[in-house]
Length: 265
Image (cartoon, rainbow, N blue to C red):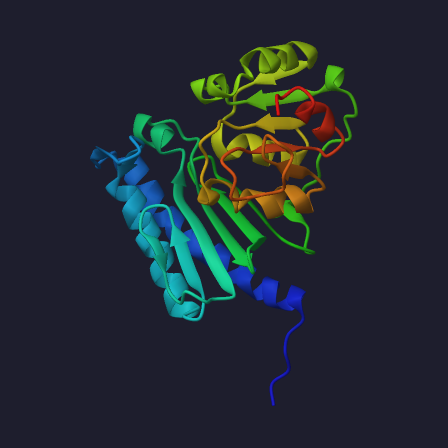
C-alpha cells in the first residue's frame, strides 16, 4: 500500500518536472531566437505570434501530458488539453515577451505554472537569452539561478524603485494622472516590462512593479508563487488577489497598500 506524499513532497516532485520542462522549452525557444528563422503572424486580438511560440508550447505540453496524463494543460497558443475535471492544471505562456523576441531583445521567458484547485502553487520563469531562471513552490522558498531570493524592506514610496508598463491601456481607466503622480513620488522609475519587473521585485532589487491592463491568466500564474514565496504581494489594480484578473501589481508587501491608494477604484 503506497502512502500519500505530503503536499511539499508532491510539489518538490512537480518542481523537478517543471524545471526539466523549462529546459526543453529553452532548447526550442533559444534556437529560434538565435537563428531568427521564423515568421510573424497577428492573432485575433492583434497580438503577435511566431511558430516558435507554438513549437515551444507543443514541446512543453507533450512532456506534461506524457508525464502527468491526469493533469490538464492551459496554454496561450493551444488552449486547454487534458481532463476537464483535473485537480491540477499547468498554465503556460511559451514566450512571454513575444514582441521582444521578434525584435531581438533578449527579455522574454517561458512561464510555467502549476495550479491546484484554482490556486497557483508552483511557478517557473525561464529566460534563456538572459541566462536567468526563477522558481518557487508554496512552502519551498523562492530562487533565482539556484540562489534564495527575498523582497526588499523599503518602507516608504520616497525611497522606492518602481517599474511600470505605462501603456495606453491605463488611459481608459482614468489612472494616467494618478500613475504620473506615483512616478513623481517614488525615488526611481524604470520600465523593465513583462515578467522581468515582477521577478526583480521578488529579488528585492525593485520594490513595486505595475503591469499593463489586458493580461491573461497565463501571463500571471507562474509569477505569483515566486513573488509570494519571496515575501512579496500581488494583486490586480483593485487589490484583489486574483491571478485571473487582467492587471497585475507586485510589491515587497510593505508598499502595496500605499501603491493601490493612488489608483482610481
